[in-house]
Image (cartoon, rainbow, N blue to C red; front, side):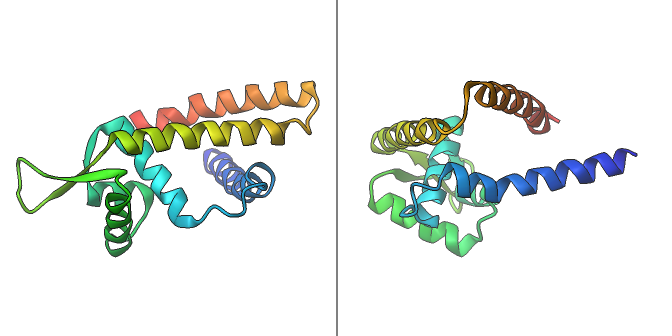
Length: 147
């Protein structure tokens, strides 16, 4: 029984991914995969302040060569900076810059505005149900981070 419910939960989460991109992000087809990876990286660095490139890559399921390329692009754009790890000179850490923080805040505001426009197609009852379901899902999924 427990395995069946885990399968259902995994299937439901996987089914949400294409729905999310099709119905929620549908008005922004111009965003590239690298821009999404940049935003995820900036979000991680806002939370952790400074982190090894390899750890960020692991969090985002990004290969080491792609993470290096991503970091180089972000450094060139002034969004992050490389910092030597005080414990191991061979390790490179990334830290978000003020420009990166501003870019992340602007992007979040842009996404929030876009999401609100997309949700305008739902009636108040459906939006209320969606809010409750998303808040519940967030609280439940947040337990995985601490567990």
